[in-house]
Amino acid sequence: MNCRNILFVAFSLLFSVCGFAAEQNQAIWQSKPVEHWTKILASALEKQNEKAPSVREQWYAAYSLGKYAKEAESAVPVLLERLQLDAGEDDDVRACILLTLALIGDKEAVPAILKEVDSEYPIMRRTAVLALRKFPKELAEDAQTVEKLEQILKSHAETEQALATNCAAALWLVGKQDAVLAWIGQTLTLDKEFNYVRNTEIYQTLAAIHLILEDSGPETFGENAEKLGENLVELVQKTPDADSALSACEILVKLGPAALPSVQKVENIAKKPRLLSVLAALDSENPETQTLVLATVEDSAASLPCRIAAIRGTLHFPEAQRPAAADVLVKILNEPDTDPVIANEARLTLKKLGAANK
Image (tube, rainbow, N blue to C red):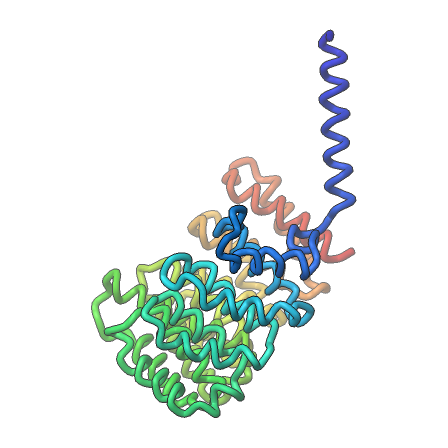
């Protein structure tokens, strides 16, 4: 076979595969029905099955049923039975089943989930509490479990941080907001020297706030939102932990107008890229903020992170102000000494600004 024929065959195969992929155009879990994934887990229960599915296959079957959510309600009996199998041996599968049961939302699963809160295996405890967020009414009716979660939260320094995070999110949904707010305030108040453990504690607390916002929206913090915003702004300015700072900024944006006053009080915000990004997201309608962002874009003396934050901040501008932002970006692209990184950000942002206007 000559070179031309080899290339022809190769390209034919490539286009065949691409065509097949385009026809499928769906996630793997969607490629099989609920019955298929249920059968995999059911076969794992057969003691004499020589072709029992692997742990990986079982995990993906449980995951897939979770993606089907309510449509997979018929699989609940098998999921509950598989949950009782091989405790401590393949808890990744069992933990996945807990989340799947929560996503399906069948109340028959609640007793089994509650039971795992007392599991001797950490991953099962953490996941069970996380799953209980989907059953707030049933959790609220179980005073003993609620009290248990409160105790975990109060003694969080001596327990797994991820478990405390999930307890906070679950307790918020059953009316224990005061206890959760006290925990958040205690953790985010920077009265201790930073170290690895401290940063982990903060990061997990921020994760709890993300879960609360996911469940209930920014309005859930009510009059406490402004104080939370103040704590988060202080955290962003003081923490050496980049992950925590980024997470805090994401929360500030989610809090919306309630967080804006705290952000606006920051001195020299144009020199603080993370908070400049937050300001651009929250206050893009303000002409003063627009002027500040564009001035930072043009300021060749500004740090690279600040200019990048400002360039990306123009994406939040209202439609009427986008042409002005585009003009500034074109201007810096035409300057011969523009940093290549800045030039690349400007090109990407111009493209996005153009797409947004279509």
